[in-house]
Length: 349
Image 1 (cartoon, helix red, strand yellow):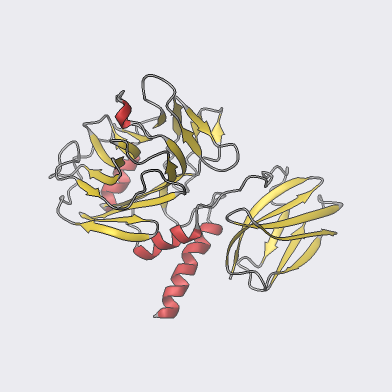
Image 2 (image 1 turned 180 degrees about the vertical axis):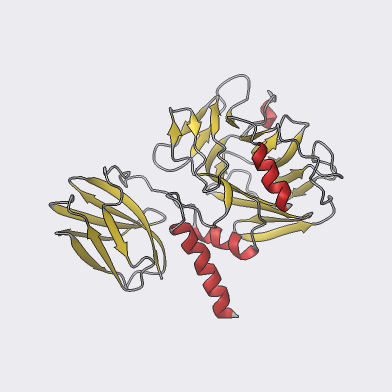
């Protein structure tokens, strides 16, 4: 049983590093996923999930892309307090996918300026402050989940669900908040651990409205300052499954993975010009370059906090690195040549 648990945890992490598509996500199956690492025309955050549904978000108001990492910063410099992200279209397929399974997970990685704001929307699928399908919010230092059922009504509020004693008033490091729903059973997680659960708010979500929009940071039609999220957001995912405690914990322990400041972005014309094998690696890692890469190649390995773990230079098309002294974990490897740079993730067993 213990071996099975380790295998499962490893499989979850592996799914994050080597997903079916070209993006990186910890647990497979997100139907909406944002790393906030790509902007279309400087105004749109791309949904990079591997799901048929594509829910891109339009920037509204004072929202800036973080210059040195994946993520955005929502600020409040205007007078309307409507800064945030809103889906381009009303994603009816999002409601249909969750209703069909009667399960969902909302996952947030970020660091607000403070947690004392009332009704600050982390993630909301809603019309306004009264009509919603679901919302994950901060309220005066509490985490709150709202969901529209046959019992809770249009607002998803009665009875409400607020969890206290979790959040610092002024966070100094990223927070991982996850809310799962499965046929009326709800679990809230904070930084990888379950902190509360309930099952008395009804299991029928058929009243959902598929004309609502997905929001991050602020709900539509609200112009009150108290509803504005302020701070940084790094990753958001929505699943039409209820993640298990093991999956949530694996996501948290994988860390808020990003390319730290000082690591050059990938800009090689051929992103597949380097093969890394094996990945995951236990002792020795082999780098194989295609014929387009010439001259001296420099390799740097960083941990997820940005600290340099190894540095080596070589010439030729193949290089072997000994990694048996590196602790187990997730790392970023940067390969630089005169043709350009590329950053990839690798798991050390």
